[in-house]
Length: 258
Image (cartoon, rainbow, N blue to C red; front, side):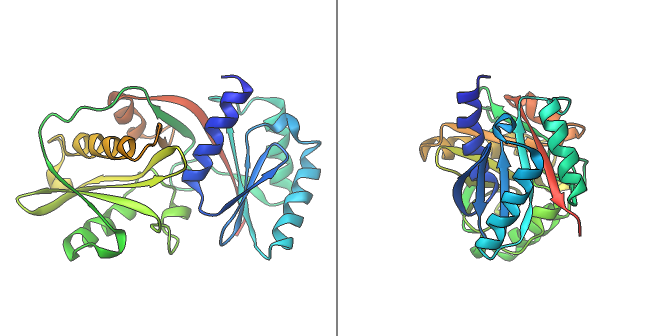
């Protein structure tokens, strides 16, 4: 993937990952929301990692925000790249540790839809506002948010307000909610943040039907890219590759020590 395509894809991925205003920065951008995140996809444009860290800290202070961390979006498994390794080391010294392990940080692999998933059977799927779910759907969402493996990392999905601006697709059988998908739209990209099927309703094609519906809805809304971020070592990565998604990038998270 050349630099121009990487920058284009990375920008739109960032818009589905973080809420806030995008501000250009050396090597990528800052996202100004309730906190500041730094996104990096061209580490070669950083004069030096220490200088980048100081500039980012100053940007956060200037906007009255805390600096939550950084995400480096790179070609797959680029952790061995000297520039990325230098950035990782410098961030660690300043208290920003790389966390990509299941259950401790952000998903580390970006999957982009290669061909649309096809539902094996028709299923009733409704698009609902996250703030207007019925009690049964709210209970299903509560189960999803504490599932051992998910598409949004724990530090993100458990924060208040993380559902703002999302679309919730709820699958029902005989009127009862049995699965849901939470999707966020960027300018040209959609990202599935959460996919969950009730334990008693699995192995029936419900997850695939939810994915198909989510992709159809995103494309109807004009989103050209359909993405999912997963843990490289997790079971969900294998599941989504079977549904038509292919690994395109790595997402390396550096999160402030607490």
